[in-house]
Image 1: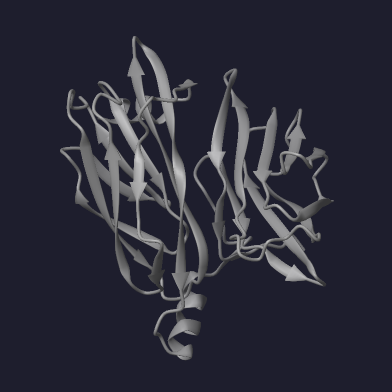
Image 2: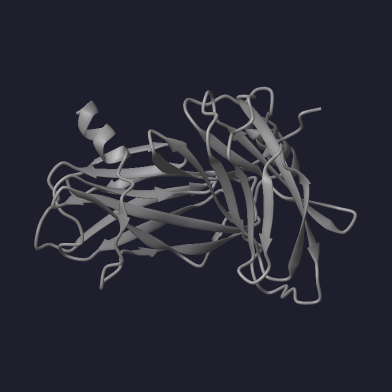
Length: 284
């Protein structure tokens, strides 16, 4: 089983955009502290053979399986994974999760995912269109909320990970600007690396801390990029940029940042999703 899971885990080949997409169905709104049903509809014959469906949930969301359609299910590091050793053919599948939202969070959150499988010995991937859910304030008392917040916080010094990981501190306002801190934990990898984030409309970007990366901001695509030909020697470090509001901001749109860190290993470029957490980042 280990070798099969490893094989599925390194499916990093072509991205396949199927005629029929995998769909995530969730409510538009939920109160903090409550549970909602997440339903994923997979078209017939979308995947084949050894296949994996992976959903990435925001920090503060906890998932339990309701209907797995004979797959092996696990939920770790905010990833809900369904693994089939032999994906059912000629059958439309529907898998479901019960998702509980922590009582301490509020705002807009994104749920996204991907599917991986093999076809003619070629690894294929289809991305799932992200869905946004609004978490409204819950019914907990102020003392209960503060207690839960303290339990979920952890510091830069305390953070550790196996392999490569990338975490964004929840962006915060300072002097009218939005500060974005990102922790890269890359272990012994010292070759090529790239961090890329898509920012909301209505902001310009200024680099604050790059750790000798090439910093590029594409204003048309709203993409922030940090690129290293050789990664810093430190096993973990922080890059920082700030967002400066402009007259284009539409307050009715959610403030969302999507990001990915890429690193080179054995002549392959491997993507790692950037997770946003209530972590206090400082190298000082």
